[in-house]
Length: 204
Image (tube, rainbow, N blue to C red; front, side):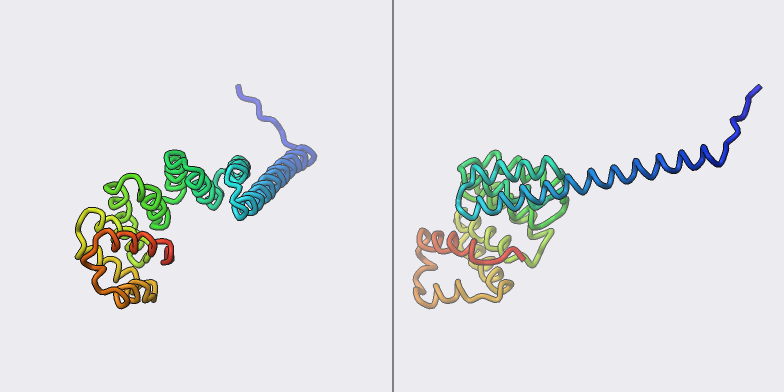
């Protein structure tokens, strides 16, 4: 035979109080961790602005430790690692960021950038992925242009670069060609030009 436990108003009130206190404590802990994450993130930004990338990387890692879903810290941590000459670590971090922001064209563009100086095939693959996810990204199109030119496809490279320029409402490439029309037939010089233009067009 099952015996039912009789509830009393006092017991119900006690249980409700315990629930409220537990929720309040959880909210406070979350706020404390978010505040700590923001503090370390701001310190990382300050260190990065002074080109102290090792200190910045440490600060961004602490920010992530306190708030694992805080995606800006991953982005700048990857940038710090790349600035320190650690592209493999940067790619690992960007892979984590992509897990938090799947299908995000900006993240794919960042991955393409990271591969840009080491693996042209993967750089082009990720640039194309970024364009699928963010068709109007000037940076993604310019990265693809750079990759195509490195692969010897000058005509398509120029088409992509001009599209990037159009999306960015810029005349950078047009100005270069106007000043030196023969650059189109100078692969090495064109490559240097496109490489320099990548950082001058926005992501969006």
